[in-house]
Image 1: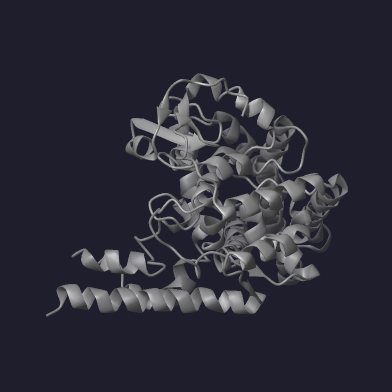
Image 2: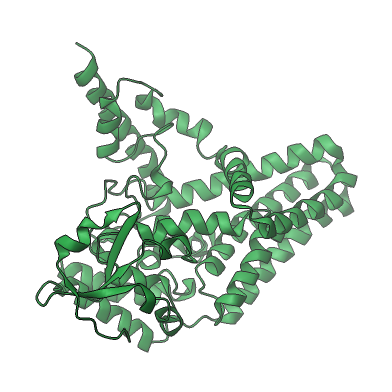
Length: 431
């Protein structure tokens, strides 16, 4: 790691004891770091790094950082010492996974194809132009209006996948330029907050499907998921929702309202509370552009209806794709699983095809993306055989589903978790 040696040594018990809100240590390659104060200045957000307090963060550290030489300078001031001899044992599973990563680096799989992203951005801009021009040329009758709405919804969905690439720093050679393009794509084209996305999504990648750490499963006010959450929720006397019916009301308050209601509220709240004024500026450029173009065509009421329906369609697209990879998988409290197991238990893949690649933004390779989040998405399929091989060697389930089968599994899983809550609730509270 390039860190000077220290005379101080620690046991794992010492490290695990420092997992409090105001006292946090973690381990990277056998070296102990005190992140208590540094976590507040961590560029990826305080919660991401804090989720590994008291744990080994070696593979997570490598997964999130492309330029290790640049990051190492931040480690020296927070270095405490080493784990005692014999305390840091690298498991065979971790060795094999790190060999896969080393192979991926030798194959240049972390090197982006700029033409891929150029054409992807180009097709988004072309669809955005078409969304406006079809009504500008042919009027606002229901046929051109519908075509325009479908084009703009596609723009928003595909922009969501593209901003995801910039957010993971997997497009440009410089993180500076990834951030700048992320501002443009997320703010000007999509009308959302880059910093809010980073805050939420990095936590998800750090601890996917881990209750109390992954914000994507912090949804128990409306839904219970997995096998643990329903039972824990059932033990509470307060019944907030009829979870046994969640597989039905999911269609009413899940995909339709996630973007137009919940996400809109949360990103505005984030901007105000975190004073992310640069994100507010970029968001405003989207709304100025949108109103300038569409108000003369549709009027105020028409613009509001068009915008809301566009967000609803985008929300359907995003929700079905994103939840297909995670909701049917294991959801539990943090048990400090090694990186490979942590990600494999929370993710599954969808079959490769030209349509599936485009429709999901290559998140049909969710397993590979979670294992190597900075790998450009057009290379994920190339590392798949090696990932399958290491999973087979260590007896880890590697799931690949059809697109329709993955969607069905969302509803099936919600139904199962709801029934589990219902049975547990009656067992605890109904005599």
